[in-house]
Length: 282
Ligand code: NAP
Image (cartoon, rainbow, N blue to C red; front, side, top):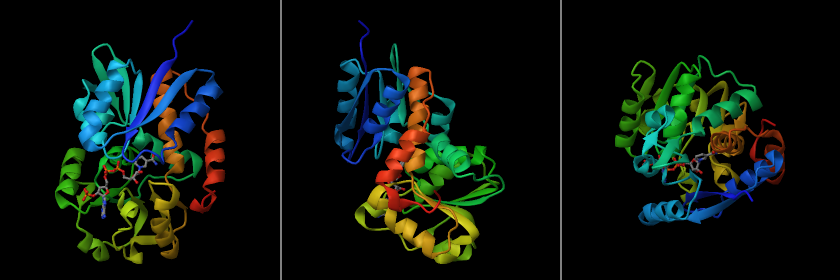
């Protein structure tokens, strides 16, 4: 009898995570039996939680907020894109430890281009945040051909660290929140902070959204509402939450673990139906 492979997502908090549901859906669709659990671990508990899952024979792990940077440090090896990000969201079991990958950036770019028909080439982009998610999406946006990437973050040292890691001074511009009024409009504004979780979305001038500019909040559910409401009021054209990105990054992780890419449309539509209020684009 084939042994059922074991997977998990580790984060804190984790109760909101849709990843178990998405991977169960993919597993059924592709007829690949698997077990996928959600493990709640604070930063202090993270290393022990990963060790316990490894010792128990776990085959793959998704990493979510706030552990992606620490997870990359704990891997034996990193893919090129995870190394550039300095953050891992997908761990693949190897003989002697974990191979860390990062599928967030590809997930966002796929959602924007394939699902929402956006052309990212030549765009002036503002990235708000410099945590694990921002690190994941920044290299993929540059690879997709954007013209410039401005980054702001509450802790400026992290803005600078991310800009340095990206290593493209001609296209990447670290800035402060105080500069936002002077930067003009952006073709795409991305909220990659978890600020709304503590009801603390930073003040953003409406001038940030250029005419026909778009906006994405990487989060989904209730925490995405304040930014999406701001973006719509500021005149955003395509205004979307992170649900599509979530499904696409999960599909990419599934491909890395099982060697087969699931179809994402059905699970996206099912999840969208239960999060109906959160996008003006579909
Ligand atoms: P993280 O590593 O903990 O980073 C959090 C970011 O939010 C940092 O830039 C932090 O700034 C900023 N922040 C937190 N509280 C703030 C506040 N009160 N005011 C201003 N900035 C604040 O988390 P993450 O992994 O990057 O996740 C960020 C968001 O993206 C989460 O909502 C997560 O659910 C979402 N996400 C979605 C997907 C998807 O597939 N859709 C994937 C990844 C993440 P400091 O550096 O100053 O602390």
